[in-house]
Amino acid sequence: DDWRRFAVTRFMDWQKINVQHSDPLLPTPARHVDAVRALSSRFINGDDWRTIPLVYVDEKPGRPWDNHLGVPLEAITTFAAEHNTHPWICIPHGAQPEADGYFSNQFTDLMKVIVDSVCRLQWQKADGRVPIFEFSNEIWNGGFRQKAECSELARTYLPNLEEPLSDWKPAAQWQAERTLELANYVNGRGIVVLAGQSTNVGYLDYMLDYIHKQGKAHLIDGIAIAPYYGQ
Image 1 (tube, rainbow, N blue to C red):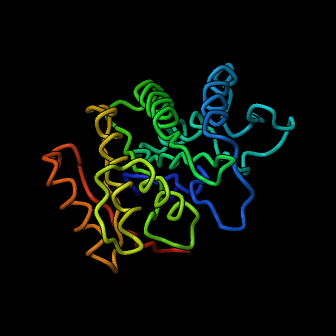
Image 2 (image 1 turned 135 degrees about the vertical axis):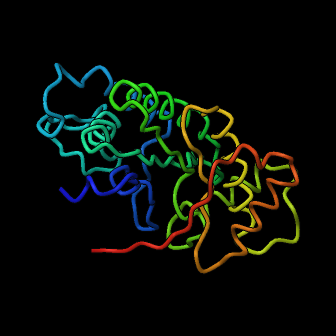
């Protein structure tokens, strides 16, 4: 079983974290929160998680997990426990499109319910294999919609936004702020990483300097970079 060779499993793809420009509008973060909570009551009787036809709120019965809300957290944490691995969980960026073309920040509620659910499930199933948390994925990558949406959120909600800015810096500041919020909420229950890019050291340096200036570098447990390998 090749999975057992690895101490950490990152579930970004299972969670459907990346938002393509061609994707339809996703369910509201509030609906996503309701879905996470509802699934907790539907994970039944200790049955094998691979055979349970779980669906999200309002989804057609029998629809597979490979949909816009991804694999349930219950299945993710059970898989991690079965394979004795730390689950690496990405928190969706939580941008909510509004009628006037702006985005509202719905990250906090979404982050809290995911962190609480994962920590509760993980400690029940795998003693010592603490969860790892990351804000979204590849916020620097213009190929995903989360970069543009995080930039808009930064311009709307960050009063200390530095100007003039390169096109990537608003999103980087938003990522740094939300990673700090995530770290404050996790509060020792897991590991919080700040993710950068392997080919652009300046992106991670910028966020680390931004966090250091606030005197909050101690809240971040580690940093991550982007290279992938394998098939």
